[in-house]
Structure formats: structure tokens, C-alpha cells
Length: 511
Image (cartoon, rainbow, N blue to C red; front, side):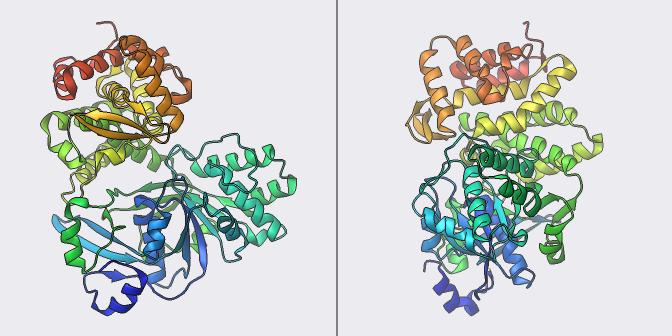
């Protein structure tokens, strides 16, 4: 039986293996940009927990941020789905399953623009949350929308807020609390700056700008939960255990952390702590962000592509491989952890905990899923550690520069003219998903420089739009990347890792 709202209502008393969220009607109070696995297993799960405890009484309206998305699939199941949380507690396996009922509906604004705009007129709407990846909160010069959905996320939000401002005649109590989850520094501030830039470009007026500044509240945040997504290999077993089929089922680890900077309005209204959820309200999230982004996310990003090109498909599979496991240890403990501004025992313990979470026997976290938008992820999560290491040691970190070379090799393929590039691994194709401009650049550069590996790497490293700087100016980096790339291309990742392990840890770029 396929999961949907009618099924849940009819079978609620028989669903003994799951905890079912509230089924009564509630006002739509949250607008969420993003319908992917992470938000559904993190924010929507938390809202579901608040509703279960009678601490929120609100539903989420999901907005699909890209033309290709899951709004239709969500609506087909009446936006109910299962989150399966699994992990180890005190060495013992633990599993919890929840039917999430916190989403009311999903909107594809590219086909239902007016339905999206109508959300602005809802007096109950109070919160905006989002996860559009690191590539989402970016200012793109865009004409003011006139009946069509803009591509950029900040442009969508600006349009919605301007509609709300006008509909409620600038009422101060109709401002929004905006809590983005994108893994960029000061994400709330960045989104606000983008919105104000659109307001200026579109000449929306000083009154609107004042309303944004005084009636809307933007929070910087940090999110942490490993969410592998749909457990395809064990779906049938889970269906039998649950008693129904759910194509939107999401698997996650037990651990979750949401750090939100600011102790004002949102904290009083969003009673996560009262619900026993691991939400930290703080005046300074930077220490949390530094450890999480550079150790957890940075480690993920640094080894996902090399491991995938080596023939691995999951995080756990990668860490169980001796050579890749050694590579990860080098990247984390030799090249990332020492560059971070935190007490040595704190950063090492955090790193050890992260690797322990990666080895969660229940999580089959696909490497290909981690590679989404790898260019912006590498720039935010890995590149700062690489640069700090080089400045501290006057040498290039071998594992992190190897990861950069592997990224260049991974983005070798044919651009399909849309949102993906087709690459090849072991005779089978894979899809690289990223900003179309990035993909087109990589495809054309690989085609033009296929016989000149040095020129290829120099061209890619020198693209300031990708990295916000010319990486060829980093002493020794170009030399290291060219060497690693050549080894990967001609000998494969595993042999290249063996070659790297034979070399000294540092590379001064001269040998």
C-alpha cells in the first residue's frame, strides 16, 4: 500500500512500528525553499516534533527552488512521508521511524507562479526557511519578475516579500522571520544583502527597504545532520517492516544540531529547546561553524570525488578501504584540523566524532549525492583549509590538493546543455550536477586542453568566478594539482594514492 494521507488516517491505529505526526488541520506558518532529503529530515522533522508536543501548531508550504524538483511527487503523497533515524547509542543499534505530517503542500513556482505569490497574502505566514545549497544565496542581476518565476532564490524571496509588504500596507507585524540553512558564512546576512540589492535594482522604494530592515528578522545558522536520503538497497525490507510503501522515505542518522545566532524573537516563538531538540541559540555561532563546515563538510567534500572515481559508491565503503581511509586520515588530522582556530583537544575530539558518525553501519550515504554543486562546496568547505595550511607551512597539503585535482578529473565529460554533465567511470556514465555555467566551462576547457594537462589545470585554477581568486597565485599549488591530475588520469585514483603516500607529506612545488 502506498503511503498517503488517507492511508495514514485509516491505518493510524495499526501502524505500530512508526510514530505518526498530528493529522488535524493547522495554519500554514512556514514557507520553505527546498524539498530535498536534508530539509525533510531536518527542519520538517523538527516542526513535526513541535506539532506533536503542541508547541507550534503550524504547517510548512514547500517551494521547489529549481525547475526540476519533487513538488509533484510530494503532492501525490499528500506531502506525508517517513523519516527513519538510525544509529548507535552506547554501542547498541537504535532505530526510530516517524511519519511526517508537517508539510501541507508543495508548489512548483515555475508552473504555478501565482500560487506561490498568493502565499504572501497569508496573514498566518511567519517564517521562511531554505536550503538551496551554497550556490543558492548568490546575487544574480535579474529583471523584476513580471508573471514568470525568476531562476535565483533571492529574487524569488524579494518578490514574495514585496508582494506581502504591499498586500498588508507595510504592517510591521506582517514581517517575516527568515532562517536559511545554506552552508555559507553568515547565511542570514548574505540573503538579506541579496534581497536589498534586488530592492535597489528594481527600485522598490525606501519604505520597502525600511520594512525589510525593521520588520523582517534574518538569522545566521548552522545545520548538522547526515542525511543519506532514500535507502534504495533496503527499501523493500523497510516497506515490509513499516507495512506500506513510501517512495519519499528518508534515512538519517540520530544526531542532529541546529545552531541559530540570536536570542530574540525567533527563540521565543520557536520552542525547539522545550521540545528536547538539539537546537542551540547563541550570540556567536562562528566556533560551531568553523568546526562543522571545515571538518565534517570539508572531509565529505575532500574524499567523496576521489573515492567515487576509485570505484566506491558510499561513504562507509570508502572509509573501510585501507588506502582511502588513510587518505581521509591525512586530510583530516594532518591538513584540516591543525589549521582551525580552536583548542587542540576540542578540534581533535570533534574530528574523531565525525569519522565515527561516517562509519554509522546504518547509513548508506551515496558519494554521488555528496558531489552536488562540488565547485561551490570545495570553495567554501575545503579551500580555506588548503590556503591556511599553505600559509602556515609554506607548502601545499597533499591530500587537499589531490582532492582538487580529482574534482577537475570528475568534471571531465560532455555538457548536456541543462543542469548536468555526463562523465564516465569504469565504462558507465555518471551525472555531474552543478551550475550550468560551471559545467559548460569545465566541458569546454577539457575539450580544448585535452592534450595539455598543465594548461587545463592552469585554466581551471585561474577561473576567478569559480574560486573567487586565481589559484595559480598560490605558491606550489598549480604544480601539485597538475601532477596529481596527471597521475589520476593515467594511473587511476588508487594507484595515484599509492604514489602520493610514497612521497613526503609536504610538497614545496619544486620537485
